[in-house]
Image (cartoon, rainbow, N blue to C red; front, side, top):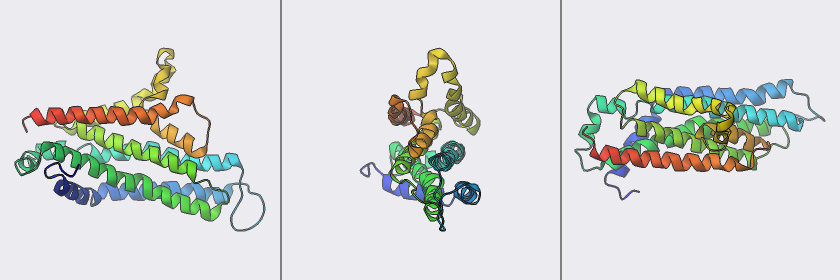
Length: 257
């Protein structure tokens, strides 16, 4: 990966720019406060057993706290990730920055790959990792018997979700040079399939489309029984995201900037 001409330099540049984004700092603050409310409100309002500062709550209440936090990160986080990447390529192309950058000793592949990876890493830390670590610290401080393994697996699926959306929007920045079509297509792809399982002939989409990653992540984190084929969702997400990005790379290599 680092053998790609200019990749290391561009990745450092993109990481610095993405980490300084005011949008991402706002998203970090909103998400952290949002997930922190679940244990805080739960501690104050949920029935518990025994005495002591840490409460022992029912399995249903514990499940509710986990599903609520992971659902918030999964669904609201998807909007945050789309918003933070929707203009990542189109803005620089409109300003002529991308055309200027690729005249330097860097490859077009390194340009797109560095953008996708930088936004994935910064988005993963800001939208998923930091908020859920804060959530877990509060959960273990307030409650007994907080599971660790299942939420960790659920978090990995949310990280895959951030990566998929970042790579998808970077890929859409190749055929489209303005923000509106990228935003419309990204939002349509992510949210429209939610209604597809209501159509009998399309029920199978529930087990494959990346749109269901938040649902699968929340179910896995809480230990809720799920369809046997639920692992197809993260698998299809990784494969389809990779294919879309490779096709965008091929197109970008032949495109006039």
